[in-house]
Structures are given as C-alpha cells and as structure tokens.
Image (tube, rainbow, N blue to C red; front, side, top):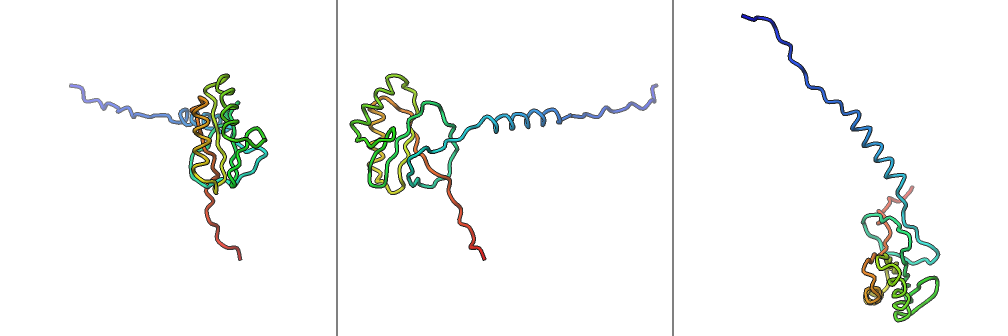
Amino acid sequence: MDFSIKKKHELHIDVINMVDVFLNLLIFFMLSTSFISSPGIKVNLPHAKGDVMLKPKGDVRIFIYANGGIFYDKKEVNTSVLRTELESIAAKAPDTLVIIEADKDVLHGRVVDVMEAARAAGLHRLAIATTDQVSPQPPSR
C-alpha cells in the first residue's frame, strides 16, 4: 500500500501577455485613426450620436446651405450640373463615398434631391455629416 501524499498541481493562467497584446492593439488603432474634418465651407450641421467615420481619400463632399444652395468643389451648382460632375467621378471610381453636409435647416427634399443625383450618377455610397450631440452644461456661477 502506498500512503504517500500526492501533491495537487494548481492551474495558473498568466494573462499578462494577453493584456500586453490588447494594449498594443489599442495603441495601434488609436494612433492610426484619422478623423474627418470639414474644410472651408461652413454649414450648421445637425447634432446626432453616431460613429466617427474614417476619412477615405478621394471622397466627395457636397454642402447644402439653409437657403437650399448646393456647393460642390467650392462653387455653387444646381442638381443637373452636380449629376454631371458626379457621373465623371463615378466613371473613374464607382466606389467613391459621397458625404453630404447639409445645414440643419435645409428642407428634407433638398437633401433627397442631392442623394438621387448621386445615385443616378452611379455613386451608391452615401453619408450624411453631423456633429456630436452637445450635452447641456450647468450654468457657471
């Protein structure tokens, strides 16, 4: 008979390496992210919560003012001229992203007109720009 005491082996999982990998990935993605910034033309964008989009190269920006004026490439255009411009872009790069920056006071139909012009031109990747929702701040004393 064997009356010797057998030692139990404790299971030990070392998570330091896994934490190190996750921190490195987090730092990599934070440093490699670039955010969309609005150039030149200023419109009063509506507020909404949502994801931050990365700025792809070669995207198309269309600005719509509160009075309904459409600006593309720093000049005012109508929907037919806009469609012609977008058709030439779609012929070169059909996967181009169209970002619509419409003032919050623009009528919904005007934004839909621009979206339809982009779709008719052959561009189907559309995005509507917004700003972050501003939380109300308490009055200062």
